[in-house]
Length: 102
Image (cartoon, rainbow, N blue to C red):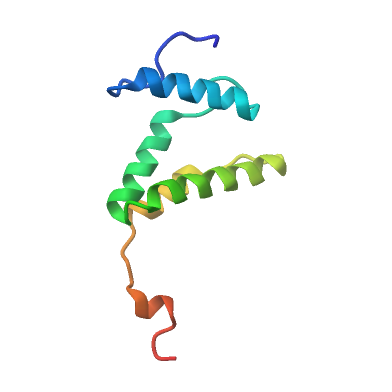
């Protein structure tokens, strides 16, 4: 770890910081490449605006989209787009998901 400043100021963040440092190393990611605050904000927004299980699923989907963009040599705005989508989410209900009227 090159930078000794804490990633987060949340209670218990020392454990989280050490976990993310270890996870980055295990996954071959550059040190300090995971923006913990942004991921936690995204998870919070998805959990509160959509449903609690949406938090990890949304975070996974954003990581997947960002990885695909990186593989194509492109930048990714997946985190910002997912945050915006979560904050503006209005559940249309089950009828809309199954094609109401069909």
